[in-house]
Amino acid sequence: MSRDIELEKQIDAYIKGHLNEDQAQELWEKLLQHPEYLELLNTELGVQSLIADPANTSPEQKDHHALIHSLQNSWKWVAAVAAAVVVAIAFNYFSFHEEPSLRELALNEIILSENLASAPTIRSQQHQLTPGDSLLNLGFKAALSGNLSEAVAYYNTIIREYPQQPAAVQAYLNKGIIRFNQQDYKVAIASFNEAIDRAEEHSFTREKAYWYMGNTYIKTDSLEQARTAISEVYSMKGIYRNPAGDLLKELDNQLNRPE
Image (cartoon, rainbow, N blue to C red; front, top):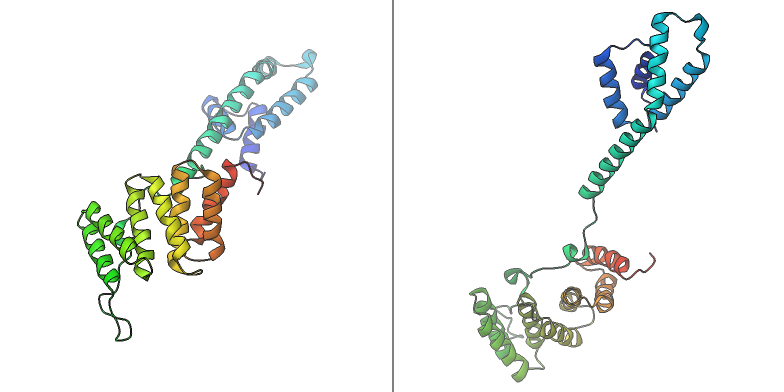
């Protein structure tokens, strides 16, 4: 604790009877904000009462010693008030400095325009636009227009008719995103799992699928499964590494795992 020299001087002046009523009131207000100095005041008051000689005391000194005695008797009350102030300050501090909860850290909604996959409309001569790519773009357009059922129908067609094309991986991912937003978490998890199984090992699509799946497990309170998925995200060291790290810390707290 750093010393407050000015406050210590005020305490000394108070004990010596050099403060008027307004100055004394100001001192008490400061003491309530700095309860550690109440112990100093109590000690000084005790010393003053011990060295006082009633036989050689003027009326003014007797009044001052009476004040000291009164203050000593009210010490427990002052300490209680100070303790209450400390508790209130601590409560307010932690109320405004709480760590985000698991629900606050996890996704609540996935923005479609930023996260749905689509195929490039122009391909090189070596890579022509496939039927699956065309359907993927139609699904993207339908989703952004608000026709989510139509979008999912396009994705299901890709999955059913072109399961070996790269577009099928994106179709599973997109279907999972839409089902997540619709709170159909069972289908969302199944779709993300399929995307993970089909995506290349170190691809961004695989990272996204793990990230979304981990968040979906949090929504279903399946915290062990959520931790497994989020750990995969964290280990991939991609763009979701930092938020994945935050989620892992909170998941470990929830699961009572040591750091």
